[in-house]
Image 1 (cartoon, one colour):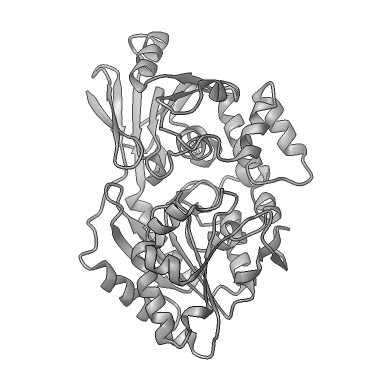
Image 2 (spheres, rainbow, N blue to C red):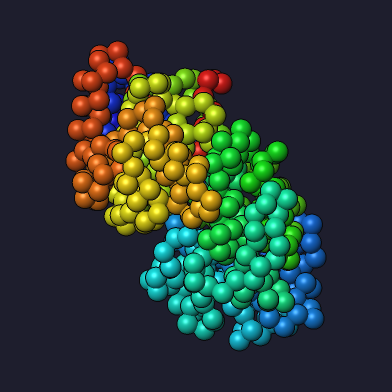
Length: 433
């Protein structure tokens, strides 16, 4: 069977899998785009969940700060921001009193080209737009969550009269789903806040997993952070895989609005897989396939890590991640933590022993857990193969070459599972097809 693997923005890579070996090809189901996305956003802002209309909330407030996502997330901002700004101005907040804060978390700062794609040139050049830097940006200390996470939030946001967060909702290995309070706990937080919340204890907690917010300590802690910050309003949406068009948008109070959206998404993103395979071929999908940091989260940990409950790969099996990764390493802490260790066990022991963790330690820890049990192959990457081999993984020039090689290794009866677009999947193994 010929499979077209998602590869970069709008691209695919062909892969031929022998029918006798194919255990299945899986992806999340797609939904129809909104017929009138502008109108849907306006309706959400004027009839929010658990909150007054946004223009009413603006009354009596002078300054507003809007936290948005970076290029590693699907772009709902291009549709949402013009409507959102119209409502702010209708509520009495002036253009010069609005700050747009890019909540990059521990990612590199958004470039001007990325910001223009995200916001459009008119907004980019007529409003104050700032990148958050988890190491360098001024932050306000607001206290500590019940889990002991110190809450340090970008000062521009913390001191604004009106605080709004905009984001896309997708499955997430810690929070269950992105969006909601996660922008506060990660996107515009300091490295100390991010590092403390991404601990080994959190990674290993049975409720901290893809698609689950119930009883999830990471999610509950993030909600605490949002309350401490005084987050007034969120605008969250879902996009299509193929063209990025908006399929759903919700706005309002963080608990109520995000909770309503997530409740409907649990079925949309759920992918049931009958059982583990010898070889799992993974295409993470754009925009999560641009670097090895995100591919390891959505192409490695998402199929065999603690966050999925049951692995898609049998013990001793292989994961073949097919992604361009043209951005390279992306997070030096993650990469160097793996590179400087001689074994995965050494990575795990080191991260567990740290008194203070930085963003990236958690990803190295999760990947090391996978590497202890499975072989990881990065195929058809634009990275230097030696960079990949330096962190205990294998590098192969093409997806087809990698699969053919692994079929020879595991024999004629080997079963191959293909997962296309794992950044949109909540994977359940052993519960039907």
